[in-house]
Image (cartoon, rainbow over all chains, first blue to last red; front, side):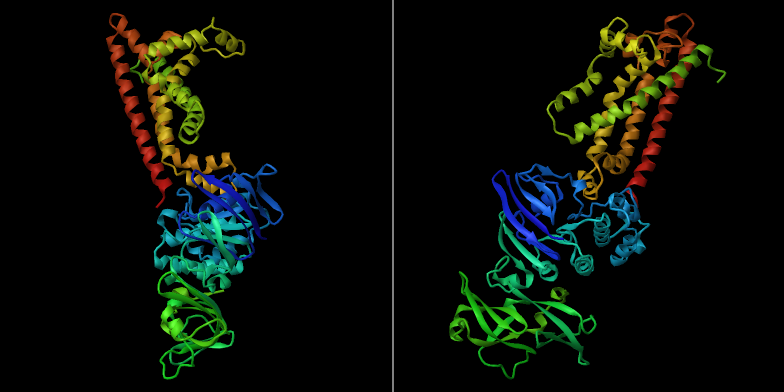
Amino acid sequence: MSLSLRLRHSFGSAGLDLSFEAPPGLTVLFGASGAGKTSVVRAVAGLLRPDEGRIALDERVLFDSGQGVDLRPHRRRVGYVFQEPRLFPHLSVRGNLGYGRRFARAGKSQDFDRITDMLGLAPLLSRRPGALSGGEQQRVAIGRALLSDPQILLADEPLSALDTARKDEILPWLERLRDEAGLPILYVSHSVQEVARLATTVIELEAGRITRMGPAVEVFSDPGFTPSGTREAGALITARIRSHHADGLSELDAGGAALFLPRLAQPEGTELRLRLPASDVILSRRRPEGLSALNIVAGRVVSIREGHGPGALVAVETRAGQILARLTQRSVSALELAEGVECHAILKTLSIAPGNVGSG
Amino acid sequence: MDWLGPEEWQAVRLSLRVAFWAMLASLPPGVLCAYALARWRFPGRQLLNLLVHLPLVLPPVVTGYLLLITLGRRAPLGSFLEGLGITFAFHWTGAALAAAIMGFPLLVRAIRLSLEAVDPKLEEAAATLGAPPVWRFLTVTLPLILPGLLAGAVLSFAKAMGEFGATITFVSNIPGETRTLPSAIYAFLQVPGGEASALRLVALSVILAMSALALSELLAHRIARRVRGA
């Protein structure tokens, strides 16, 4: 199931004008607040009627201004997880979870156990929403949306109202959802961390228009992708845990390159995603020796992008994937870096923070 | 209830019946008006608001007279309805109608206030879960406004028990048919030696009004606690 969307809408001075296809997996709508992310999601749910456009899930048309199709929200079969949980305060957790099931297609009764199990909701079933923590409430909201048997899941910054601890509690559930639920997810976020960890596809919005779109790994290794300034730029690479060593380190295999991280909790063989902030990558023309850094990969410069200031973003193709390094323009000329030049990227081990490590 | 004479007892029973039906019959239109005023934007919204509140500010005798000239036996609408078997003029149903109209602003106000406290985002969430509009109202909105609905219903009931001006103008003061508690008190005060009966009914009115209020407070408190959930 994939979503195709084309819409145009104006809100006084601002406006939306975009079209995209969201393939299966988790598609993140990314951008600063006010970019129009929420409006896109509300249009998919039928809570906002665009001036013009077409929204379809595979062959099923939800909205088509040309043909006068505009399905009411309750007929669209979209699951919507809002920024705030919006649980029904007068119903128990079980009542909330069951609310949408009345309208779901029949023959899905085994889903209740599977989804409550996947989201860890079984111990909460008889409680009232008011007696749950923020993280628990949002998990119930996710379960409630899934149990309405949707054809697509919409999530509008579901973690933004939560503190870091609660976010870390929910992120793994979202990853399981992406990997196990098998339905497309359209996810709104302005957090690079969340995008890096969750996205299969990234769509970047700015003032109602798409500025960048593509598979997450590609978008993140594009030197032009510098959300909220160069400081946040960084590549995304995938790696597999090869073994856990006795000295407290875990060895990972990223496309044949060996990387070391402080002992990870996941078992050997787990696929992980690593985010490498560009400011924590050092480049060297020769293979460095006598250096304390453990993670060094060889590669070749594919592009150099100079900003307005003294900095430059250098993209290096390695066996592990494309890596971004933030250097000064002075260093770029001192090292005589240019497209095609061979070099070594030194990744500062400790900079790979646990929050940036996700499976998928 | 030996301390009440048969005439007094008749007035009490009639008042309870009139107030009960006035309250019950005004609930559905009351909820609809409150919902329209709280949630919908439509032309004529201010006019509806004005009409709903009019009985609150009009002299009751004016309201009663307006009812008389629209629904009286000789009025076109009144005679049309009478042809259908619906009689209001000089009938206890007319007393209930007058009482319902006089209590309507209080009912709508109470429901509207509690509706405005219900987050429309919850109805939106219910819509995305597949619930059609009427079901959303019955399963999300209605349970959440129940305390306000109950408070409004009790106010409407109490108002109906005490309504005098519009009732006596519209349906007169016929013993056993339209002589409600206030009309009976008034009538007793008009005849020599009627003070004792009037006083007994006054005492009863006070007791009924106070217990209705206490009951509604208790129920509203219980429901509010259950709805908020903890």
